[in-house]
Image 1 (cartoon, helix red, strand yellow):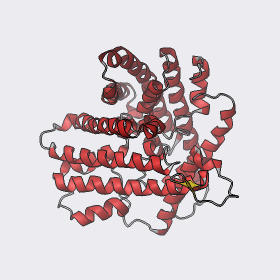
Image 2: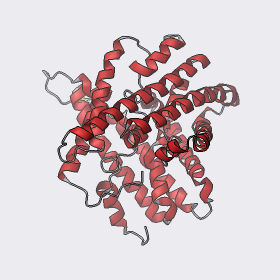
Image 3: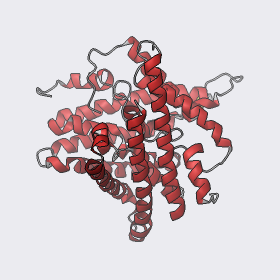
Image 4: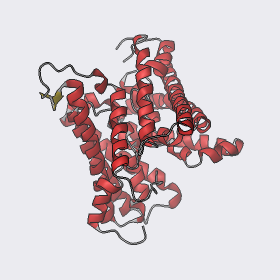
Length: 207
Length: 197
């Protein structure tokens, strides 16, 4: 990260080149669970985008004042504060969805992407690029999870956003709304991407 | 909710409601570490220990500090701080007494702090309103369940990587996810035995 990256470059990287889910396979824990319904995924992703973007911005703004040794703790507290905001907002305005998401909103705190971006990018870069990086990475992340939800919901329930799209005779694949469906879908997506769009460099060792 | 005794809950957390295979928690370290059985065993043991202790600690803090003070919204911050402190303790212990293991696990130990499974277990026991004994059983059971999953997948990966010739692009995370999917399918077979929510 020696020289500043161009904004457009940061975006392409987050959305495609270094896509956090497909390329780095990071942070799928807390969000994969809610991909069986598109609407839950949308709400969850909105919360995640807010958290990642704002945390990256805050970490970057405070980067000169945070002692090296306690930076992880500081980052965690920053992230947790934003997650609390998200949690309270969802509980207040979308109580049904809040119920359905259960503990998963709180688990955004431990989503590796948030910490990963703060650690790998935001703490060494000025606020604006960090903000963009957080936004791009979380958008790239959301795109993949929405894709997974778009595969799982029609096959598992025969609906998209609650509207029936499958023909009447369609038998829902119960497996798709259960856990294995999510693992298979993501595994196949990652396989497809790696096979057809191989990465130039395989240096994603930044967790 | 249905009252279940702690012993049932313990087994349910291992088999029917495995925290990794049905709740997708703790996948990040899982994907990174499950390459071989040995390191999976070490990390698994650390997770069991941390999860059991933090489940109890977080239970006590939630019901005896946060609820009386009406600060339940701050549970995220408090839980994560407790977990972080605990992980630090485990890390120092392993470094001091088992340097070989410390060398294998390397940078992954701090990752336990951001292991979703640990925070997830604490959040689940609050949402499902478990008692103290149930929380203890649930924490220990979830930890053991996670450990079983990582060891099993690690063993399969070891075999597959040695013997099979894989199609292009399948090696690495994609393969692990598909193996995990098959494993999750297998664990669904247990779900008829006990139903907990």
